[in-house]
Picture 1 (cartoon, helix red, strand yellow):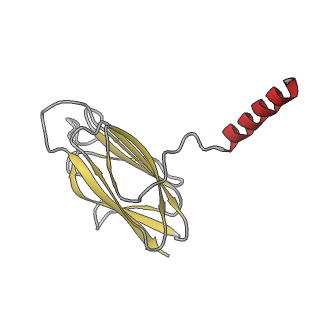
Picture 2 (cartoon, helix red, strand yellow):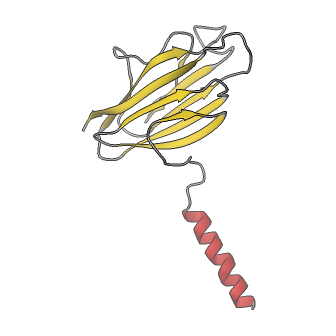
Picture 3 (tube, one colour):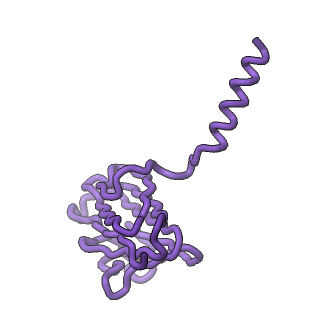
Length: 151
């Protein structure tokens, strides 16, 4: 009996060590963020990932991982992230993108990753969107597309 219990505890410890607890689910590459969403998206040569916020989105975190691609590119179409400090983005909603080996780039108001100045990464890239509640701007939010830039 004691050996069986010890075996089950050991099996559970191995299973826990192999699981990636800090990452979100890996499902469809395109989705709409819920109230609090954490996802992992795999970017391949033909993958097009469109991530958008919903009306009640408070926090959305997406980890993009490259599979058979050497560089990915993120651009945003719809983008209004309300912030009362448009230069440093310290007072209100924020949108951050961290590329491999770099510092997080903060975006807010109408400053966004666009076609001229996209967010590029040659490794994993993480995106955070945090919003405070409030009815000041009911149509705030974002819609961003991530694609393979160099296969």
